[in-house]
Amino acid sequence: MNTTTVSRPANITRQNLFAILAPHRLAILWIGVVILCGASLELVPPLIMKQVVDDHLAVGHANGLWSLAFLYLAAVAGVQSLGFLSNYLTAWTAQAALMELRVRLYRHLQRLPLRYYDQTPLGDIISRCTADVDTLDTLFSSGVAGLVTDLVRLLTVSVAMLFLSPLLFLISLCVVPPLWWLTENFRKRIRAAERRNRQAVGMMNTHLQETFGGLEVIRAFDRGAAFIARFRRVLKTSLEAYNEAAQYSSLYSPTMQMLMAAAMALLLWSGARGTLSGWALSLGTLTAFVLLFKRFFDPITALGEEWQTVQGALSGAERIFQVLEMPIESAVQEAGRVNEAQDGIHVERVTFGYFPGQPVLRDVSFHVRAGEHVALVGRTGAGKSSLVHLLGGLYAPWEGALQVAGLDPRQLSESERRRLVGVVPQAVQLFSGTVRDNLTLGDADALAASVVNAAEMAGADGFIRSLPQGYETLINSGAGEGVQLSSGQRQLLSLARALVWNPHILLFDEATSSIDSASEETFRQALGKEAAQSRRAILTVAHRLSTAVTADRIIVMEHGRILEMGTPEELIRKGGRFAALLELESAGWDWRNNPSYIK
Image 1: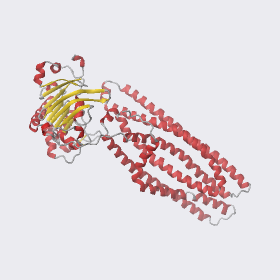
Image 2: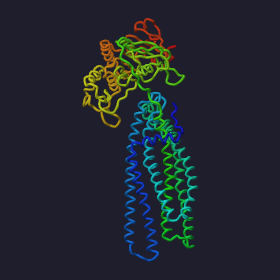
Image 3: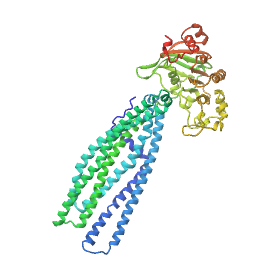
Image 4: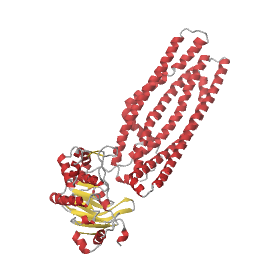
């Protein structure tokens, strides 16, 4: 899946933005009323200046100046108060809309197919949830709100200028064509640079996530300098795009100021000649018109700058809506009831891969009966973990069919899948919270007795009770709080988590690789006894052949195919691939990652 941001039709982006703001129509209406009142009140000070010049200064009358001065001050205070109210309401509405958007985006990301996460860098995903959403805050609070405010100001000031002097107003309009041309050219260049910058930020986040996630490896191989050089290259790409956007943004304002100065000079020359030539244009009218012209040009200049802000923010909005429009997992259909006669695992002629044309499983068929423990054995890349992913309902096969307890795992709801299938992935993931929170994942329906029983079966109850608050002990989440667990303890919690809901099927993907041999043997014995009593089917990806021989049957895989299958005794007696691998492991060889050991 290509995650490169592409240009989207503007109307689609606008439709999405309107949909985000739609629930806040009433607040937006009030903001519009406040903006209109503020823009209308802003006309009062120039009109007061006209009256001061024409009715007082020109004729030498001082009576009433105090009243006009007080009215001037009151008008300015009113404009500022309405401006504060408008800004506050806009910020409040924007944050409320963005909170809903963040939740919507977070929910949508959780429902996307796992292929999206296989093919999209994690840093890019995080960037879309953070930096790109923040651009919408700029879009709503500064861009769109500023555009609406200045458009209303421009409209009210234009009406006042037209009322004061139609001829001077026509002269003032000469600024519009060059302003439009400049704004359009700046817009195209800034938006293109902003889009490249957003992409570079995503790359930077990905690099940081990979670096700090693999810091131990980087230090072990002394590759810190190489990764710093790589980070510099990523930053350079972002810096070049940012500097290009900054160059155009910085050039825009002085260009607009020079344009305003030229227009103001033309206006003063025309107005002064008109006053001296006997036009019906008083000195007070010219004074008020000049003041209004500044109020006329300021929103025009601001409109251009705010339009640049909008264009820059739209590049982030495009990336968000690009994700929101990705199709989510297919709706769950009625899967039926658990078939006790077929209780177990059935895999029939399954072919599967993560990328088109690159299968990792080829025509695989086997079954695991209820109460049976089957171990999957094979070198790295043989397809063992992919089988666990398919049986866990995370992916759909290209060809063939899978069933757990007689049902298609892809057609199970999440709650039903959790009840039927317990999965312990290869990578242990614990979350912020207590030990109990991590075992139940916040599910209040999980019984306390079930939690304790699961911990006892996994061999985790002893160390949990030795913690300061037992099951209520906070686990260190990286924020400096809670206890720090060893890798073995973390894996025991992962094992216990899969057992809490007493599933019919258990899938272990090298789930005991960090546990010492004695603890693993104890767990295997307890699990095997319990599985036989509850008729639970167990499929294990074995990382130690010495523990695989405790399974009822063993399946040996190679290059996505089943090479041999049978009981441990049968395979050892046969003297095939499993027997050879077992001999290598007994001799201390790493058979999993070195294909040259077996031809």
